[in-house]
Length: 160
Image (cartoon, rainbow, N blue to C red; front, top):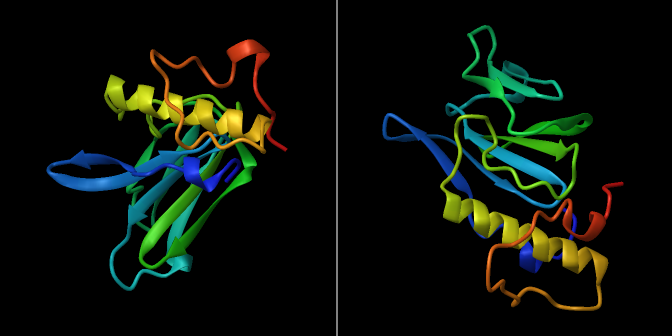
C-alpha cells in the first residue's frame, strides 16, 4: 500500500445480506481490497476470479458466481490480483484513478455518507503523507468536509 501505515484503513466495511457478512472491503490511495470468507477446505485452484476494468466476478468452480457486479470505479486489471489466505479470498484492485474515494467496492453496496467522508479524509491525509514524507499526518484532522484527494489542487501523486 502506498503511504504511511499509520494512515492505513483501521477497519473494514462489511456488506451484509440476510444478516450475514457476504464480504468486507477497505481502500487506500491506490487500491481497494475485498475480503471474502470461503468454505473450509477450499483450495485456490477451486476458485475463479474474473476481473475487467469495470466488473468483478468470483466463485467456486463449476458453480455460478458467488458474487458478481459492477465495480464502483474503473481498475487496472493488469495490476490487480487475488490470493487465498487462511480461508479468505483476498482481491486487490488497483484503482485506475489513484486517490479517487470509492463509496463502495461493488456498485449498489454503498456505505453511509459519514463513513464515505471518513474514507475521503483518510485518503486525503494519505496523499499529504506521500507528498511530504518527512511529516507525520497520522494525527491530523479536517474541520469540515475533505476535498477529493484525486482532484484537490490539480491532483495528487500518480500511481507507478
